[in-house]
Length: 343
Image (cartoon, rainbow, N blue to C red; front, top):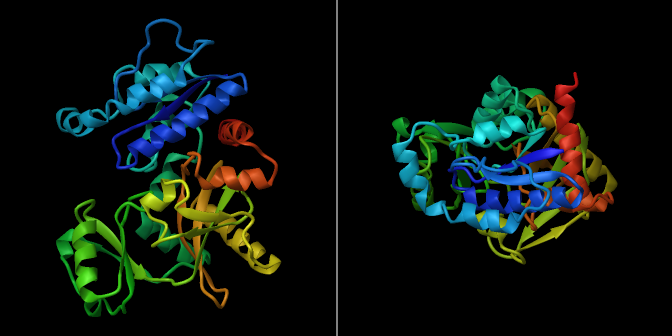
């Protein structure tokens, strides 16, 4: 297949996206596909053969990373999100593997544009992408659909900074951006001073934040591929919580898969993962994150529509337990994503 692996973008997760994209591109090439790595936000090269047999993915990733310093200035001076020739290249592909993370990549806008243009892509559609990107809306649907989730609410910048008492909530609390990713803009507040600072900092990212009860316990993640839950993986950061640094710094987190849980708790978490994917209308694949208290009560925090595919990412580890290696997983994600075009 001729495949565009779309990465980069202009979100806070641009560099992580490039790493994901590079790994996916090389994996698909190892399986005989003519995959190329392309930055969604900057100009694509369409001179010469679009999908060459010989290709230096590492050099292309380095070229894309070299544009990082241009992102903010380009955002100010350009209205269109897609870089020049990017859509032309995507139209020429059999499918686009979305290795985008964060704003625009995961909020449904790219997916909606591709739907209108008839471009096939991996992952779920525009509606479920938009829903899952909004943590406040996700929480509402989880509650309506019977998926346990921490108690919480949303607050806008216009409503202003407040105290936990004004919200009828008790510390400790979690404050996080409504539409962020990779734990960027997530804060745990144990005091009123920390709560105020967390809200102020979160509002520098977005105009709306989610405030929810802090669940103390063990952290887990479950991939759902083609409506079926993968093995549960436990995430235990050596320091702090599973923030941006712990997500992507090798050795910062102990990850155990399959997680050391009873068969009953494993089945229960996998059930909630599948149910969570269903109530959010997910197609293809996604990953849901959980916290579990000592008494076994579990809470689904959020869903990730385009989970990371870096060397330390979770879905590849879960797939490995099933005997699926990384290149095979990349092909499988394409296969399950194509189902939405075969109905």
